[in-house]
Image (cartoon, rainbow, N blue to C red):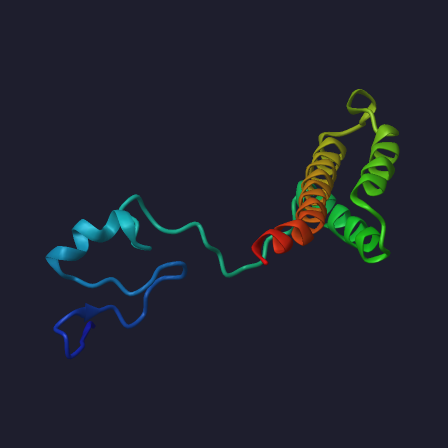
Amino acid sequence: MKQVRDDSTAIDPEPSWGSCPRPSTALAADDDKETCHSTEGPAAFSPVPQPATEYQKGAAIAHALVLRQIDAGHSADHIAQVQVGAQGAFDDAQANTLHQREWFAGYRDTAADIVETYKDAQLAEAELPSIEAEES
């Protein structure tokens, strides 16, 4: 049974998981493309937790290790050199399983992203005094 709010918009009191209450007005049909209401079927959300993929597991390890190196005060260049050495031991051709390749891809991609972001932050931080001096 639908409830009606003061603004005369009908709301389903028990929406399915992954959806939000859907107004039953003519205008809502036009807004579907720009809102959380999909006309292409149910949302892909599941309330049951799914196990992490191998890619996500590799990414999590890279995130933890690179952030520890940053917290230890190492420069982005030093961390990049350490990562090249660590990743140099892995060879896609020698990986025994697809899971090993996926894990390493997650590690490699995440480590590279974090190191690149850290380099950008260090460059911006180095440029900050000259920018502040120009503004003064």
